[in-house]
Image 1 (cartoon, rainbow, N blue to C red):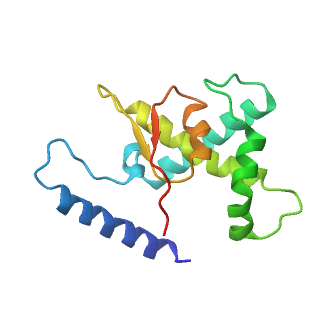
Image 2: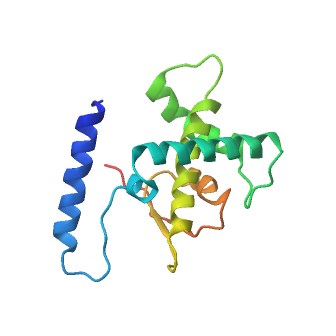
Length: 148
């Protein structure tokens, strides 16, 4: 519910808070994910490429590393999408593809970390796990949801 500049300012504030709390710990780097792909334009380009690949998987023209249970994930996410955008006569698959592309892009970025074994530690909805793993064999661990 905020504009982009406010959101980015809040993200920067959050990064500074994490940096303060992790000061002195070995090998802790706090950055915006977009910094790993050359900024916001690079992030959007990466996300678009992942969306195209996911669409190819859905059409059956690209074999995934791990299969994506499209219908099951869509059923799990539909209540959220309904709250976000209201009823959609054409369904919510475009929203799932867009969000899935974000997760696939995160998996791609984790794979790019050279010389490191990366692990994605997640705390959102575990239904999105297949998107991290559809294009890469990326280890993913989900925390149990603890929303209050």
